[in-house]
Length: 225
Image 1 (cartoon, rainbow, N blue to C red):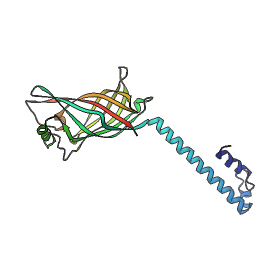
Image 2 (tube, rainbow, N blue to C red):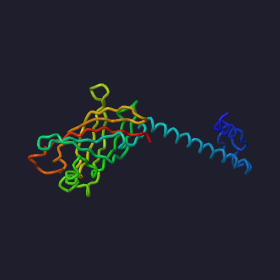
Image 3 (tube, rainbow, N blue to C red):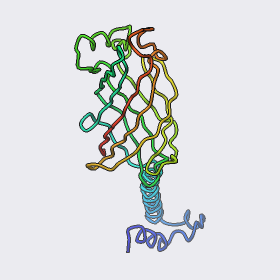
Image 4 (cartoon, rainbow, N blue to C red):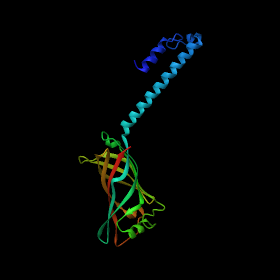
């Protein structure tokens, strides 16, 4: 017999009341009144525990497990033409949360950022310039962030479609792009790419040598919490 059943059975046997006969409850002894109230409180507590556990399970099913994006196994990469040559760079300092359920991928939620000061193009002098106010202004805008607003299924098998807002240098723009989710090492690897115009975010000025448009490629590994 479960604890819930035992408490229910004891409640049925309390002499002071039979299914809420209040008059008989008032006429009962103090001991029986206290016993009745004790069992009522026990039942309320147990029901709350059952409801709390049920709510936890429901939330897990509805929103999926929470993962943390990490630098190890990830890459945030961009490519832009500089003097006609494809020039690449990377960011690190991944932070944020990813909620993902492979059984219900369209309920996923992404809230991820990188550290703007970690920009790395393999040339330190250029990286110092990129950290200055004319470009990423990392002193005033230390993070580049993305927050998803909607996930849908894509036309291509194995792909999903991401909608969200990217914020760079205090400017927020809507973007959308296809991506994949692959189970890996107890977490998930999310991969996709999209194009941006740097001048939409005030990153650099008009330039004859530096292209306005760039491609951002994401390979984000998020580990289970």
